[in-house]
Image (cartoon, rainbow, N blue to C red; front, side, top):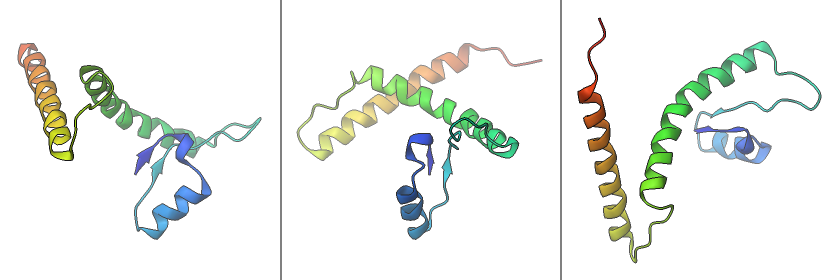
Length: 102
């Protein structure tokens, strides 16, 4: 499970452990202290991965105007699926215009 520091609580960590899930939660800086070097490196590597995913969600959220206003799960799934398809076509168009690195 990947999440930011707001989700690093004893309760959420216990739930993840009970379900057998591995956690990739950001570390919280202790009050008036710095993170250890290991924690800072872990946060940096997690942030690098999360940033790529967050951009996709932000684009989707913007495209869907923040809400899925449908009645029924099937219609909501179709709307989200269409938004995914539109995002993928936009991404494909952008990638196809890029030149290959030398």
